[in-house]
Length: 351
Image 1 (cartoon, rainbow, N blue to C red):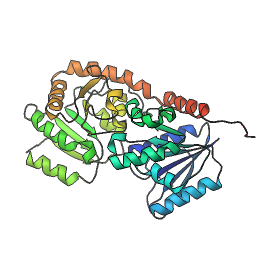
Image 2: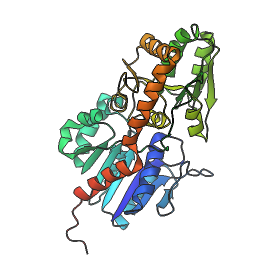
Image 3: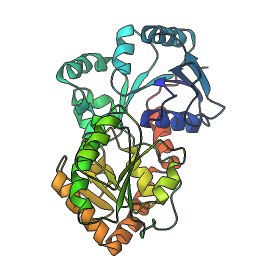
Image 4: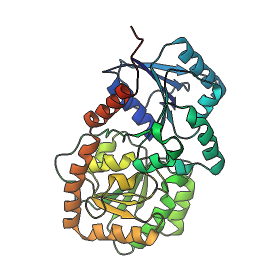
């Protein structure tokens, strides 16, 4: 069976790029996998891609990319086309008129992210799809207009599960993500201003880059905060988790929250906003971390303070985090994908 993935790019250090690379690599053991993406001069794939995957990159404008994808699909028989979309890729490909035996859309961002006009556009266009895959059950409910076509499969955990607790004695708290409005670092800084005054020996390390870096730096300076450090990008994400005592996520919305299962796999307790649409399906409040009402800055600060003060609580949460992470092991998630593919593709008529 030939399966074609389409994604805007494999050259950025993002969650959708990582998931597409992982899925393509693991599924290439069982199927012929081709992945179509855009190419920027002098840039390479950020994440590992198995050599069995047919990695095809197109140059040119967005329109040229769409037309080249459409042409490739028309000229190469495929059982399933799977579009990895953050927002626009699936709709514009459907508008372009791509045709295949099966066209699926893997949604990497919460449906609530989209404005009302874009939701209406999806309402019309997505009825043409053969399958929509969401990362959470909460997001799946947003597609009730095509409920019979929707399935939910979580992301693969890209890190090995740690076999012992995190560095609970560390006075470092970590957060990882693009420096954008979505990730809510302005809210986290407001919360940290309440935390730092009572815990001057603790530090918050934020990893990532993005268009809001200057705004974040300015807000840190305005608040007179001394112990928030913007660490930029890293090629050794596992060591970042392993050096921390726990993890904080302040996102306004997520498609899933890959960082949460990564942090759990390394035994980190987590404090996270209960934003749409991933954290509540990854965290158990009071068991392996804390879920805080979305955008509740004071409660976020309070929960961070509780974990800072109680090493025994961090230890309990850490043990439970390692157990929770097992749900996202590659063999478990890939089996779900294989079952979905085999149960939704008709082999009749094939030689």
